[in-house]
Length: 393
Image (cartoon, rainbow, N blue to C red; front, side, top):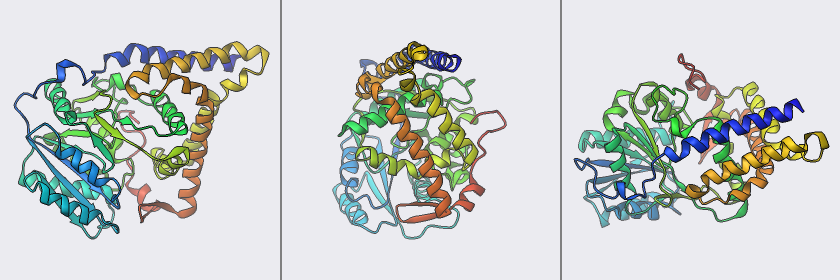
């Protein structure tokens, strides 16, 4: 009974804080962000692509169709073995003034492929174009034509050094909604989005690979990607480094502005997350197992308590709180709050994925991603500490 009510208290605290905080996050779809950013800052979009022949054309075309004129694009063909390079070269011919392609043939030691691709693109565009902002994105992201303009309006208005416009996940199957719906509510335990702009909230930093907008001066101040060459979660690590440097972070919603389909079905999502979840714990087995236990107690067990008379009430209250939490995101994500009823199943999927990520990484002695193998020894040597001197994760 004590444990069951402790779970209730935990969820109520999280959901009540979110109910108060999430409405304070700006919505870029409002009229306030419909104009042009002051000063019309120059922006360069960096798009790393390795074997992205299926998606990269649509991604680049959506960027070329942006209604913001002061925009350049640097697409990076990162050692692709498919038609990615040829597709990018053909796209350059359609708009050589705004689109440039870098071809990377070899990966230097002690660099991840994606991180090196973004670092090289940033270096080239800073030297040649000196943009005011850099936008790091992925090759499978689709942009509404006003996405960058609206994001820049808020970035300039708020004095942001780093802005995340939360992407809208394209849901094609019910099991995708089940897993991704749980992912967003589960994330509230790790970082409070409404606290991202608070410089005193040192642990609340959010980075999302689909849309990491960084002021060039801030990027140079933290030393770019050189300080995280082997970091698999490069988007989140970039955000944490910016926050630790005392620079201004912002986050915004804008349903439909930035769109991405992560993977096909729950199985596809598990496959994608297998390569990076263990790295989130800096490859510490004990911490990952502790997190699995926490998930089992706080996210999976409430449905079990419904079957036992004395704990039926706290179990029902917990699930009601989780349902309310899902409802807070429904407007911005489009995922129905009723998927909260499947959250215990989604929690078990996450536990399975975490264990799979750990066991796969340990068995292989590292991480294999898109045809490149990164040894566990190197990843551990170059991983940032899980806790910094300021106590921030």
